[in-house]
Image: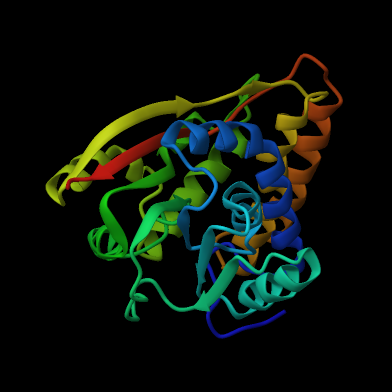
Length: 272
């Protein structure tokens, strides 16, 4: 699954499956956030940077046939996946539009809500992302972000120097490609300066044991992300193999703890 518009994390089948699992882990927290924002039947929602569309499918079930979900996605692979899933799931209320959030004109929309998860941390112009979102929201509409605010909380207990090195390499690779992993620290002020009012913030960070579902969210990225760092030239295959061995050793110890990277939920309302 090679494509010209690739992402720093890749868009191959293994990454798509990781994103599907990630969505499953986060689904109850995201559903609660959407309900707190007021999403309901009949609303128009933009999924800004939809990836393979897992959030779009859930949002479509919330707004039902009376509503509309517009999934904006750059990747060829993910865009094709969304189009196929719309047919399979009979979700005619979803419209998929392939575009680059940083390089192309946004569609002419007046949405009730925009959902933006783990997109701001990768783009090279967050102000442009916010400006584009503001143009597509109705007065009084809301944008909902899930973004990292302290990626460095991503840690194994007992401490693993190899895993800590992995975190630093991830931070470097994202920044080298124009992103900012801890972008949620900047978003509230940027939103306020762009005419939004912050109406909700909530940090999310978990401590998981090997027998718990959420353990496999940071563990799966450690496995896949280490291989991706090798592909990008940041590390060697021997290093990635050592990462895999480290994970297996920690998973064999039921007293191990994985602390997840801290995410900040933000709901901001466009002023009327």
